[in-house]
Length: 463
Image (cartoon, rainbow, N blue to C red; front, side, top):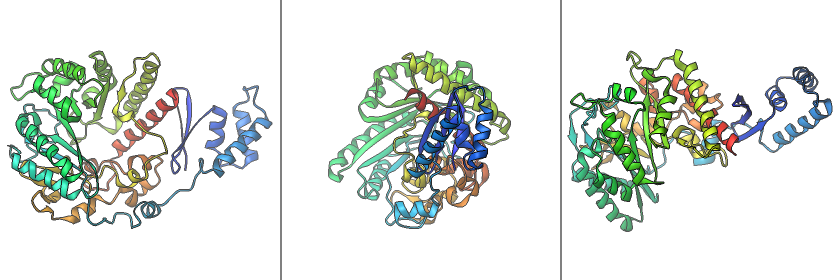
């Protein structure tokens, strides 16, 4: 299986099994895309007829092109062998796909330090921080126990990830600082290194928070949806006030202090702003250059829910963004977009092909009361309660569900050209849209494939 497309004047062909990417001219593109469907005589005739206005094209050149294609095939860079899910699993783990290693290693925790929030965002999957339950703040005792659980469950893994999440984590800021100090105090004893991330809406940002984050946080995620009228439409404070004017100056101050350290501005686009590229461009005008804009996933009955009929327009938006990013980069005015940050060296990582994000297996969320869930998007759903930080994982059968990828169960995934890049997609999005962890969220799949095409084009264009 190969995948070919044209974007921004580039003809690109992807060989998914090998991870090889080829930029070719239009003649080679048409030849390769039809190479397995037609015999050589018929194919040469078709190509010569289609490109008859190319006066430099002749039979000898086509013969050389066919030789080049055969060489790529021989070296495994074109029409390469499709490995089955079972073969990939055996090569990586030496065991059957979906079966769990023992003991299970945990590498990352999402700590819900605050099940409460000072904003009431309409599309919030966390029900404004309550997660369908009670409001509450994580105690230092629970936080320390969560760190202990991570340390004792991580085996030989050296780098451990801890995300401070909510609700709004700055509403429990004192605990966050104390917990960072506790974790740092364990690093030498356990031969570990903690990398902390904080996600915030910014209302409680001040210089003390900024300075601490710049010392201790490996990454900081700041929530902003773009243009003022877009942001304020769905992201209001608990007293009903707009939030844009309050947070933008704080974000600008923070990013200036942060410099090149990892951070990004994260927005959500809905049906209210299908032209989300305008929100991205607006954020660049504010001085932000590390950006993310996520499509909303919500109840399809909501007025702001994305619909299948929106796909053509949204795909054009992603293409426009990619083309604009190439142009700006060439002028020295580039910015990064999270979904276009793709490392193509060596092709798709074999581990990511199979393991995906690791939710429910290597990554878990911890509630303020110490309960363990597969990830933040399952918190509050008792069907996915895995255990707690005192006893560990007491329901390993839940982990086993998350170890099974749609690549193993869904024919549509098995035959998709992008499968080795997405690893079956987000389990939470699949579950919340189809009711099945291995279900296919079609709209999300289509947007992912378009983003992948755009990301590859950018790298081709910029070398």
